[in-house]
Image (tube, rainbow, N blue to C red; front, side, top):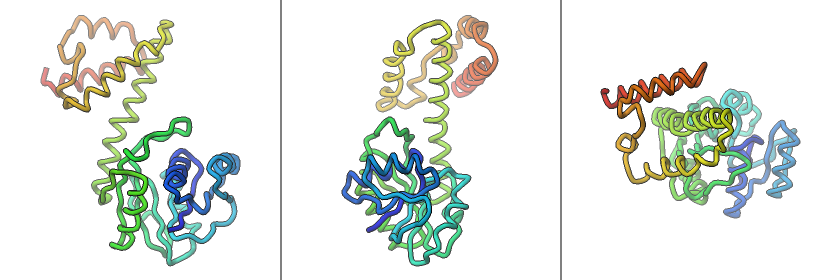
Length: 249
C-alpha cells in the first residue's frame, strides 16, 4: 500500500509522521512550500517534490479547504484512490477521473505538539466497499477509533469540533489577554483548565457547569462587564446569555 501526502501543513506533517511510525512511510510528500517540505523530509526521511507526483495507490490531500479542488486536479492518473482530509467538504469536491474518498482525522494539529495518534478518531467515506476497506486498514494501523461517516454526518462532526476546540481555544486566548493585562501568569490557570477538561470525561458538560451565569449572580456579572471592553465584553455577554438560556434562568 503506497501513499503520497499532498500538503506541507500541520495535517500533512502529522499524517506523514503517523504513517512512518507504523512502518508505512509515504513514498512522497508533495506541495508548493519547498522550505516546509524539506523540513518534513529531513525529519521523517520521506522524499519530497514541488514539481512531479510519483505513482502511488493512495493520494491523501492535506491542504486548506479552499485549495482542495484546485490541488485535486493535479492528479491525472485514473486507477488510483484520492482522499481529502477535510471535515467540511464532500468527496465530490475532488475533480479527477479517479476513485474519490474522505479520510478525516478528528484532531487539532500543531507541528510543535505530537498527539497520541492511536486515540484520534478517523472518519472514512468512499465510493465502494474495496476502497472503504483499504482506508479502514490504513486508518486502523494508526488509530484505535475508525468509523464510517457520510458527508451529512461529517458536517456535524466538524461543526461540533469547532465548538469544542476552536472556540474554546479562542476563549483561552482571550483569557490570557486579561491575565497578561494584569501581569498575572497564565500558568496559574492551567490547573483550572485541566480540571475543567478532565471533569467532562466523567460528568456531562451541562451537569458540570459552574460560574456566576448558572447561579444568576447579577452582582458578579455586572462587575465583570465593567472590567471588560470591545470584543471580550461582547463574548462575555453572549456566553452568559447562552448559559442562562440553557438553564432557563
